Image 1 (tube, one colour):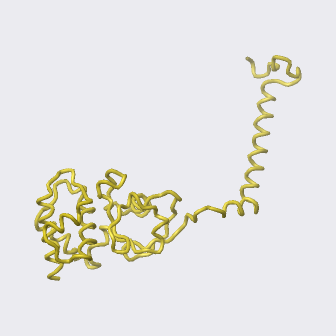
Image 2: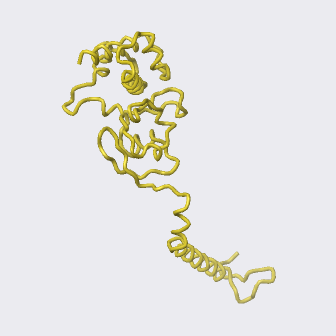
Length: 210
């Protein structure tokens, strides 16, 4: 149909397809503008405050205060990796099964993939990037892993380290069996658990000697 052809089926003969489309577009602009005004007006502000979550928040991560924009349903793992650039926290299963995303929240190991970021506001978060001292001295667990070469691909390594650090805060002198139980929530796709436990035991020994 030609752009200037009249609209068929009983439409006004003086309204063309082109003028009709222009009218629809103009009407849409008016509606959109009105919605924008209401959305930013006082009535909208009152409605938005009820039941909403503040997006801009401050997290204490590795001893530093970090200001970050967080969606209401955002997990701590996604915030750490994609908002704060702390990619040592790995995402494996993303459903609290593999432990690759383990971090410490107030010294307690937690699966970051199953913790909402808003729930840890005001709490102390430690990731693998925060294990070494400010002068670069490795944490005893990190040193033990280096000495024993405990991992192959090392994708799960940061989760094991954080789980071990948290466990040793409760039991600094565990047996091999106790240590195995303490990190049993972490899985290794390479399945070399014997070498992993040996490396973690070495790290625990270094921690006691420090």
